[in-house]
Amino acid sequence: MRRLVAETTLQPRQLVLPMFVADGLAEPREIGSMPGVYQHTLDSLRKAAGEAVTAGVGGLMLFGVPRPEDKDATGSLASDPDGILNRGLRALAEEVGDATVVMADTCLDEFTDHGHCGVLAADGSVDNDATLERYVEMALAQAEAGADLLGTSGMMDGQVGAIRAGLDAAGRIDTGILAYSAKYASAFYGPFREAVGSSLQGDRRTYQQDPANRREAIRELELDLAEGADIVMVKPAMSYLDILREVADRSIVPVAAYQISGEYAMITAAAERGWIDRRGAILESLVGIRRAGADLVLTYWATEASHWLS
Image 1 (cartoon, rainbow, N blue to C red):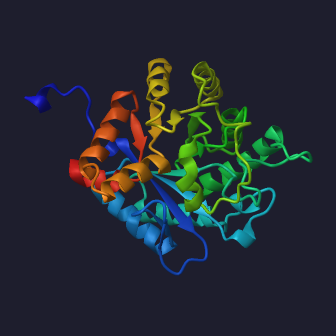
Image 2 (image 1 turned 180 degrees about the horizontal axis):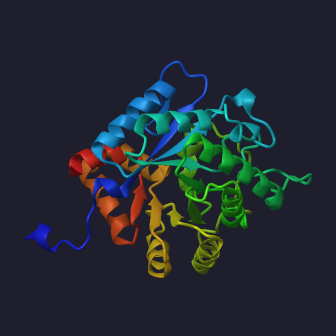
Image 3 (image 1 turned 120 degrees about the vertical axis):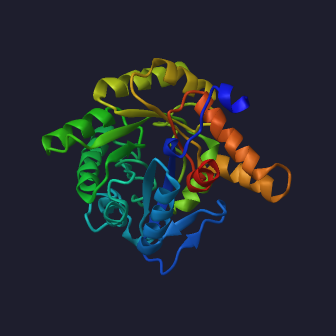
């Protein structure tokens, strides 16, 4: 009876697995603050992707982790066909083909020696327009490498429109854009910065959203839709379910939410201490994000949860 009248469903196809591929590794390396999540080699990336697809996940979101000595001020490896992210995308495209959606993080932060999401001006601020040029170069390289969907996570003004125009001019009309429309300057990103070996000094409050603001998220949503976003996203998920609900009520395209590293770490740590039921907490959190309006959820539990749901 409960199954018959349940209002919210949770299915493997609605889950997206974020993955990390790192340069210079001989074997996968577990991320200390995210037990069970790994920086992959190209070989282990292929294996984990195959397992995720077999479990039925809807997509794979790939982040690249270059060697520290390969970072520079403009994140040049981000658009280099031989950069670790683009090599990883090619590996995924070859391994899973059209069996799932291959997604790429289209942002410079992993590749810059200063750790910011864009190119810096002489005064140390992020140069929005110069960064857009780099995003277009990065987007074209990722599309060429096999990405089906590009995740515009940098939060630069006009990024969706610039990337859409660049893709269309290059004939990449079928490459979609997953717009990080409401990405907040959150304290819950800490474990992720370990996962990507971030070089960030300071914070990103000048271009990510203020956690106190609600209407700003709707303005960002409307701008991204006008610029051609195919999917829009709220990040983080669990502390911003009210924002997710409002975005879902207004969006004319599918809505995603990212259950981020800090959310993963909190549930994992509490479960390791026996304070909560791990499986129950994971599934409840995912159902809550779906109930708030997400059509798809990026979660580090995507493969495991898909096995439970199948």
